[in-house]
Image (cartoon, rainbow, N blue to C red; front, side):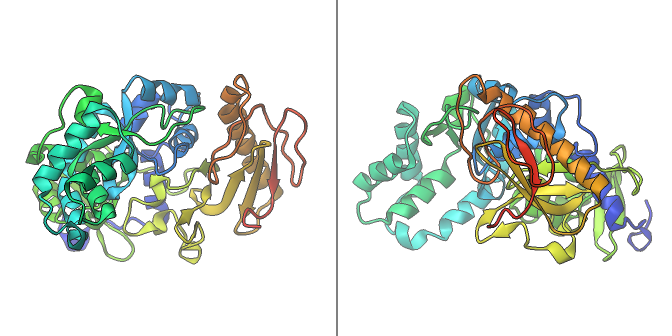
Length: 401
């Protein structure tokens, strides 16, 4: 293997195209929703609808009913894993990844120790487990149950301890497209009928590193640590070094990759793509310039709320919002030619047509957050066009009015 001082350099566009290829964003993949969720190591799911929009941007022929069916059949589920945030995972990955991040969840509890004086965390875990496995419970119900045993403890600290100590799953209908439901929780063991492992074995961690590189690489050690919310992964990468390729980015940071992973030419076309809030593409690297131009850093957030983002030529280039009347508003950060706007409109029309058709039969409507909507039909998009009856439209304007 080449010495670290002579690693080939991957410029920003090369990193961008490699990452987009792994993320299924250069062209829509002919892949099932279940296989895509596994390939991507889960979908960020802080809100209910983003996982559906993430798959629409990546898969040919995807419709929300496909993922909804997987949720209802318990082949995929929603739970807290990477970065202490809610993700949609396959059942197998839930059982693998939750133990991987358990150490981080244990450290999270220590930040609340002042509110847990006198609380036996082992007993707390046992009591909370019995409570949620009897019947799925809300977090409020869990908190009240634990307060009966530890009335002097801080209620929030008790809730955090239960969430961190136990592999809790949000049960359906929560997370099912076109349905609603309060967040109710049980353990992954109870929900799937099989137990999550304890601390993962080295070979399990090694395989997760390989899978991260296949979905997000080429990447540095710090990149994966940011994605997972973990530390001390350097030794794992060093253990795998003989089977990996090594590169440098333009700042000299060492990047690792799989030998057979795609690294397309930097000039490979990248079509416009509409991504929902909290898409992992924008959250899973320490250095996000492979997708977010430095001058646009912070433009996709307001406070603690993420906007839905538009990729143009593979990079962050704007924001978007889909309204209950099926009007899609696009806010570009820079100038765009008529030809480029036509491409954006065409992709927006596809989004409205394919992501609202399933709600036509139920007659539901209404937006959720900045990305979600329920409604129906195809769009006829021109700049500033108004929505026709039964149709949607794509317009360019500001989403932050």
